View 1: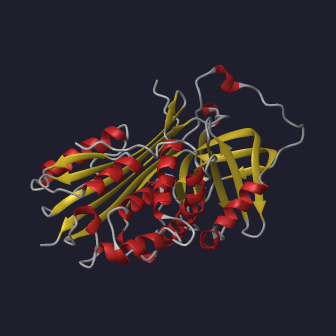
View 2: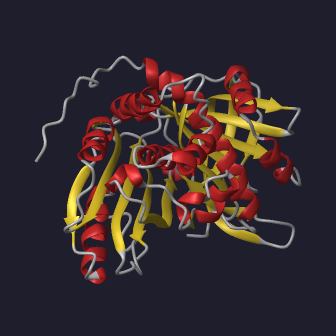
View 3: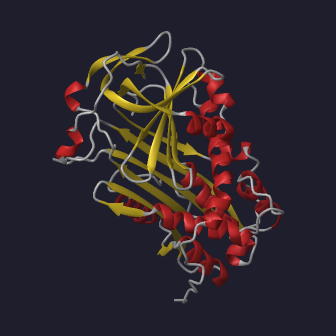
Length: 407
């Protein structure tokens, strides 16, 4: 029986259009994460700002995306841009060049990729980049060297003059890298496309303390005051880390995976959702992390598998990244000329949460409980999910579950 437990993945695609074998020095390839720690605040700031933009635009739909994935690809684009186009991306990622050198940014992402990517029996996290390049286009060697050195990007020659063949090549690559979970992402490529830059992230984790499927039962989930849907609700009574944030009227529940990933499930009091979305900040999330306490509780969380696809042009423009999509774009560090602009920035993410953990018998170990009845946390109306890595406090996925039955 296939026991994929928690599956999260995302894909980011940038396609550039025109308007009108080299050895790589791996001297940066060390594993001391000083630079990764230095960029951690920027990734978190970007994650929260983009979440607020996407949640405000969601119009009652689920939200799910990978801030980690999007920030990595934007930083790859820093290597190809100049002048104002370059400055806008730095500002959108909240980098202040008086506090950090650009090489440190790329070294930080390089260390981040090494820290995050690993595979064990009950834990898998893959992140990668690939550049699909039009046959006959010769990027500057410095650009190719740096995206290999810092981001270990795969580079593939692609026949963009045959858009259907190019789409198949890219989609097949992504389908393989995301274990079949994301297919047919790229479509309607322009014959003028010069290159497509992709990033994928795939995470599969097992809860340290799984939910027992025997206790899962159909219950009501209250989408809004007019809409109620039936969901498969998981239940577990045991020890959890939790905190009630009285400032924002929300309950924060922390559930850990085997490995270095953890998840915050954040349940606002009814009618407080918009206030919670609007007031999210790094300080808020840090406050939650510092205040969660180990207590007994009965927890009810719906099983779900949701996905979302975004054209990031508008959301990124709200963060000030606009010029790269226009004829004024300066991508001269890619080819040496100015005849490139970004045509598309497509991001797709999938998030699945269910009961299981490891198949080992230890998963059924009894937990000693106090005699008194523990408090109940019922996630039966819209809530936020944040999946992050504890080593670097980097948000891998951010989601707002409005309707768990929406695919």
